[in-house]
Length: 211
Picture (cartoon, rainbow, N blue to C red):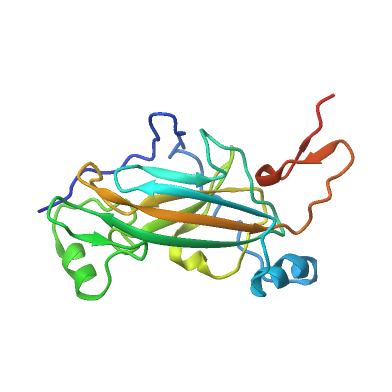
């Protein structure tokens, strides 16, 4: 039972496309907590209500979902924000009842799947069948490296450029998948007061006020 169909990072049927040719902005490293981040970081670490929260369903045969949700969404996470993601549920990865949570295959299961020849894992460095999160700047491209969605269960400082969060499944063939993951993205804003000429628009942050 070998899964060999390489996932293309192209969303269909009302979803959005992310050009894989964009340059990865790997130099944009995550910032360590500082005085400027204290408000957002402290509220996240103390489990206080986030400024913005959004829950999406990631079906097993769906290429991906995002924060903000929607077709080619704008950036919704900004420098100084702090993010925490909760992911639950199970995705079936074949017709024989094998399924995994967002952490994907671990231990001997991971060893088995990664030992199969001819499988083009979309994210070979991450666990087979795991939920994968990526920072992406619209329109600049990828920021940093792919990470397990479960790594974001802890308070995480956003990159130092505006981004959105894109979620994928590390599976080379999703057509035989079932089930779903529920992914909730909580965002603690560093600030909700916008400069003159802008207004606060929830998950989209500060946007230009119409003239």
